[in-house]
Image 1 (tube, one colour):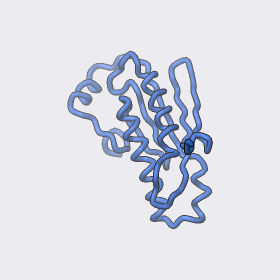
Image 2 (cartoon, one colour):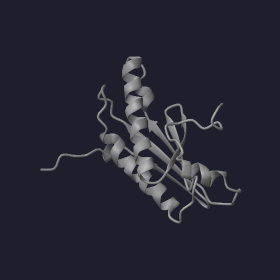
Image 3 (cartoon, rainbow, N blue to C red):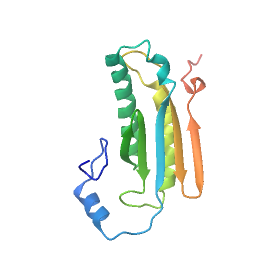
Image 4 (tube, one colour):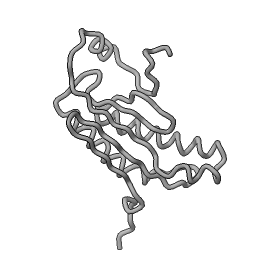
Length: 147
């Protein structure tokens, strides 16, 4: 595949390309995987256009929040997103940024308004060198009306 096998909406700036092309160096990379939960329940009830709209809204949300927290969307795998924190340039707080992005996704994805009014949930996995985290949104994470 052209472009080094990377797919996804994120593109490198010229400064990022220069940094990535410098001599190889050892670094710690934090990897995040985001995938929607229970989306398959709606496969039988939604037409393909509506399902595409739901997945598109989910992927746009993930991409925006990951990039806002300093992550790089490396791949879109089906309806999942693989993101790197610490690529192409490492920062001291990359692991913290990944965790903050994951928490933002768990809070935001259930609030997404989709064309088909499909309630979404997200599962987040984060691999930090020496540690692994998994966070899942649930129906309880949805906003509640306050009296």
